[in-house]
Structures are given as C-alpha cells and as structure tokens.
Length: 296
Image (cartoon, rainbow, N blue to C red):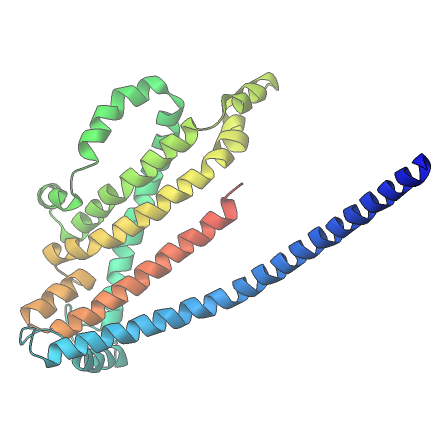
C-alpha cells in the first residue's frame, strides 16, 4: 500500500510539474508574440498621433488668427505655406552678396558651424584626456573652467570683433567657445570613469602610455566623448543663428534678422522650421555614430 501511494503521489507530482512547464512554456511564447506585435504597431501609432497633433496645432493656429486675437503682422498657416513655397521654389538664386537664396544662407551657417566645431574638438578632446588623467592639473584648471563655462557665447562677440576685426572669424570664434565646454567636460568625466583595474592590468603587461591611450583609455572613453560631441554640435548650431544676427553677412541668422527688418514674419517661421530640420539631421548623424561606439 505504501508503494502504491508513493507511486500515485509521484505520478501526480510529475503530472503537475509537466502541466506547469507547459503553461510556463506557453506564457513566454504569448508574451513574446504580444511584445513583437506591440513593437510593430507602436511606430505607426506614434506616427498617427504625431500627425493628428500637428493637424490640431494648425487648426488652433488658424482659428486664433481668424478670430483676430493676434497682431496684424502675426503669421498665419496659409501665408506661411505660400511663403515657404516661394522661398523653397528658388533656393539657389544670387542677386548680390547679401541677396541670395536660402540654400546659400544655410551653407554659410553650416560652414561656420563645422569649422568652429572641428577646431573646438581638436582642443577639447586632447585637453580632456590630459585633465582627466591628471588630478593635479584638473584641480588647478577647474576654477578657470567653472568661471568661463557659464558665460554666454554671445558675450564673447564684442571681444572677438575687437581681437579679430573680422565678422566671419568672429562667428567661428563664438562657435569654438560654445562647442568647447560640453565635449571637454564629458571627455574629462569619461577618462576619470575608467576603472583603475584596466590601467593596472595594462601596466603589468608592460604597455607604455601611448599603448594604454590607444587600446584602453581611448576606447573606454569614446562613448562619453561622442555624447559630448553631440551636445557641442547642437549648441554650436543653436548659437550660430544669434551670432549671425550681429555679425551680418550671409547665414540663417542674417536672413532672420533681414526678414524681421522687412516685417516678413511668415518667412521667419519658414526659416525656423528649416533650422530645426537641419539641427535634427546633425543630431541624427552624431547619434548614429554614438550607437556604433556604445557598449553595454
């Protein structure tokens, strides 16, 4: 009798265990299927919601303008659309040094931003490695960094004009100062955050400082550096518009200021959208690089 009971209990336990395993096996399958379905549906839902929100925004904007709640020079969706078609239909024209199509204004701004950005990176990255590796120099220079970093880049414009005596070089000078700090600080923190075990292990293998920099410090700090570069490029594109309003010449900032003097607010809205699209494209390029070098 005891043997029968034990066999029955064992059989019941085995059956329950098998049932539980089948249920557990089925649940992850259903969960994975639901997760895949959710991932497939969510982009379309997000896109549809975005389009709906945009339509609602345009409708509210048009209703407010039609009700007379805005000033006479305030832009409207219809006038802005017509102005966008007019500006983008001939973006390459040239009627003089300052009378050019929007394409040339964008090219001028991008040229200044990229030149200033490259110079800033050539300064910030090596300096960040140096300060991140040396606690003594980092403490010595920290007061200067903390004092200069919060200064608005536009505050450097008069000094740049006084020193360089050239509007083009002054705009690049302002870009350098605005793009320098995010990458510098992120590089310092990335180098400081490297675990000492890696450096100690490299030292025991007889590697020199250059080999440690190339094979340990550099790759480990690269994700943080790319994050700083992304912030620096966004800041540079943000600052160039205000800088070009003051230094003049070609550029999106000069175009916006020129349209304001003409009270062409619809054109300003068009250029604001173009500025945002180009900024999004620049950020996407650096973000793509960040995905390549990131590690988990």
